[in-house]
Length: 164
Image: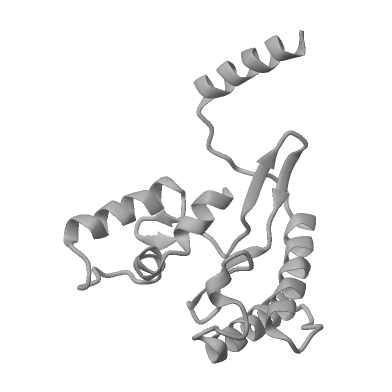
């Protein structure tokens, strides 16, 4: 998933809508369905059900795609775990959800059969995410991506002009 979309997904409202299959009372009905439609457009929901097991954010560059330090993961007991290492709010020390964080990293490590190699949570997350990235990328058969072909053609023409 594109990194900017991944960051937007980290908003509490988006996460709560994604994690629930029924309307949430704290937001308006129209805003709820606006978010549901955004999640569908991103390919995260199909028929109001989650369409993924693991999400890894990436940033495009001239050299290709760079997978960043973050993950969204659905556990076997249907819990949604979201971690973005670049979000300062949830850095260890001032984090309000320390016990949930520990359970999250343990669940992810157990289900993906990777080892936690550090006792400090931030470092443990990065270690587990790196192991999951290697596991996912080595088992990847294809990469499905939506693209606006007209925009791609324009970018190719601009790139060709720059090369001359």
